[in-house]
Structure formats: structure tokens, C-alpha cells
Amino acid sequence: MTPRNMHPEWDGKAPLPGDRLLVSASSLSSVLSRPALETWTRNEIARKVVAEIDMVAEMAAKAPTAAEKWVSEAHWEGTRGRLSASERGTIIHDVFEAWLHPDRSTPHAPEELWPHLEMLSKAVEALRPRRVASELAVCRPDGTRGWAGRLDGIYELEGFTGGVLLDLKTAGEDTTSKGNPKRPYADAVSLQLGAYMYATHAWPADLLPRTISRWGSRVYLLSDIESAQLEPAPKASTMAVLHVTPGTCSLWTLTPDHDSLRSKVRSAVDLWWYLKGNDIPKMTKVWEA
Image (cartoon, rainbow, N blue to C red; front, side, top):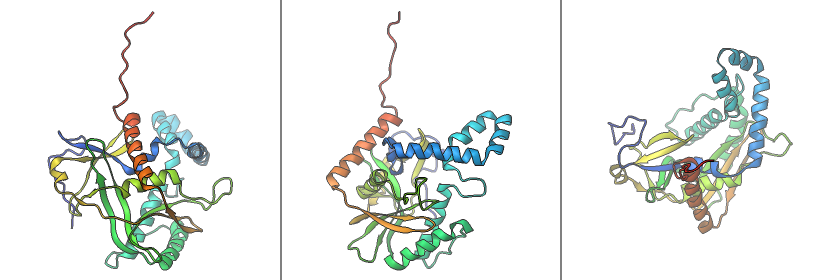
């Protein structure tokens, strides 16, 4: 089934009149102050630039603006010949889904991901996941300040009662630069999974959500016509992260106070609009000496 777009006249660039703008759940962590992540970003940029110094120097001589852009985004890019974090996560997630769907062919995975997949296979063998819903776009369209996102999936897992809202996270190495085992960031993960957990509606499988890029983040668009087509979002009993590295695979559960986390998700949405959107009060100079 090929998903359809409810608005064939939409140009793919700007909201239509009357559209509600829903911030992406994966963008909510951008409002957090995370010194450890900022340190990682600086170190990763330094490592990538040193590894690609000849290429960066050549680019800077020919196209300085392009070189500046490459350096500023280097922490998200793979070193030459290696996958980026985004590419790695997408491929591993696609393989995981293929393993759970006998009718799907398993996508090709580069050799550098074989250790990750070996670890992931151990999780599949131990947890025996059974799909309830996967790759589903959900939302909570509260007034004009809701949120939306595409969750990895809700699964039944061995040893758990009820559905588990599962997010698959990957890392390129087993340990940090200080030698500590890598693990998910609890603050960021709780906001993202909380947004999925407290979503009230879901797009039908045959309806393609409309999204645009705004203020460095993905924003979902929702019209009244599309709102009428939404379905109730599936519910889960547990939130968890399956964290995969080349040498480990671990399952982390979250046990929040739901009233508190729901309030924090709402506060993060409001703060995102203040920081990223157009909610910052305009300043007008009215006198000068």
C-alpha cells in the first residue's frame, strides 16, 4: 500500500492556510542543557576535521562557505568511508524490522555493521519481539501547540506484560573517550518516548504525514481534513530503549512518574516554540543617546 497525501496541491515547502504546526518529538531534546553532549560535539568535530584535514584544506581553498558548513556539521557525518550515525541507525532499524516481517527482504548492511547486527540478533533471540505496531506516525494535536513523531514500534517482549514502546538507539563504539560504557541519555530519551507515549492520535497507514523543515527541526503539518482522518493511537504499558553497539546490546526501561513526565513534555514543547519558533518577543529601539 502506497501512502497517499491528503493535499495533492501542497507544494511540500510551506504550511497551508489553517494548518496546525506540531513539533517533532525527536526535536524536544534540543531544549535541554547538556554539557556532556556539547563536549562530545566539540571532540567529535575535532576528531573528524583532523581525520579529513587534507580534504577540509582543499575545500576551504576552493569553497570556504562549503568548508565552514562541513565543519559545523562534522559531528553528524561519518568519517570518509564510514557511515554517519543517522545512516547507521536507519540501516539497523530496517534490518530489525525485516527480521520481524517474514514477507520483507533483509536490506543490505555494510560490513562495518555486522558486529552491531550480531548483538541485535542476540536481543531478538532473548526477547522474541512480536510486532503490535511499527513505524507509526503519532501526534497529540492540542490546540496549536501539539507534537508529533514517528515511533520505532510497540512490541510484545518476552518477560513483559503488555506492549512495550521500544526505541532503537545505536552507537559506533562500545565506550566513551573516557572508557565508560556508552548508554542512552535518559533526559533526551524520556522526552522523546514520553511524547510518543502520551500521543492521542495516529495517522492511518495509507495517509502520509506532511512535514517541513523549520528552525533546524522537523515540523509536522495537520489540517482539519487530515485531523478527521486520524485514528486513536495504540497504547503501551512500558517505555524502553534497545541500545546497540558493536560489542553490546542492552535493554533499558524507563519508569517515570507519568503525571510529571507528561508535564515535562508539554513544557518542552512550549519552550521549543519559545526558543525555535516565533514566540520570542520582538524588541524595538525607541530611544538612543
